[in-house]
Length: 268
Length: 81
Image (cartoon, rainbow over all chains, first blue to last red):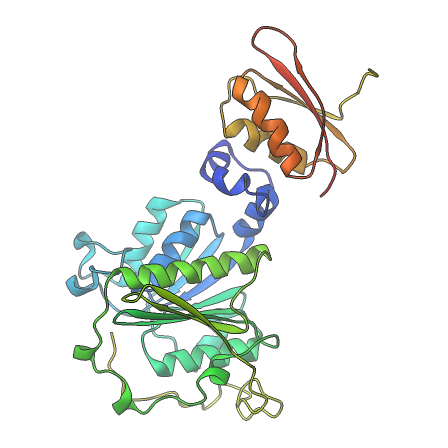
């Protein structure tokens, strides 16, 4: 790939890394990443992947920017309150790096549309904020064999894992069933220190770039847990579950048709 | 010393670090293993740093030569892909 003078300057700190170089940067430029959610996690993931020069980034979210988002959702601003989040993110990302083809999808991801939407993308990023969506994304990625950078945050704790279908565990191997709605923290219990999604989203973006480059070790057989109050990172081994409903030896979830991921969860 | 005939020549006079190395690296990446790149530069620090970085990247520095008061020539053989 021939870089323009501007691209050579823009990506120079990548190019000089032995693990990346011009060839690695060309891989990044060809990559297509699908980010689910334009919130606390989606914003930093999209931000760093845009800065890194990922060729195509799609982002899906049907929500609008609110003042209460701005303490952590770094792609949005006071000026974009009231705008669809994906349009607000588009404005930020296009200003950051015009090389990137940004596809804004102002809709919800569902069992009906997910397979079609993520088809053609190399890697999926889960930046969703609720369990039904998390399982939905996991199942679709496993069925389609797509790498998934998954993460979750709450209060002062974050978790990151990378699912490489057929190689390591999936989200259902880790947490077999969705917790009942009553056990999930309600909106007023679910505070989060604003920096936390930046750290966790940054880790997700790093996982995505390493998958694209084929360098280093991703969290494909482990879960990384960050405790911001204690300032600790714990890496826990996660085995594959041979009885997993979607990636086990005898899966019972074999398509998204008629799947029910509903649940009475607090949104946003 | 036998004359080495470079397969490619790169003129990076006027450039400073790290662009001296960025240019050199992109050029050597585009070449085949075994081929020799000649780099012409006028940024003194790079006359030390480019050979070191090229060696770190696994390439073979064949020669570093000051050709006049302000210019250097570096010859590097690409060793790996």
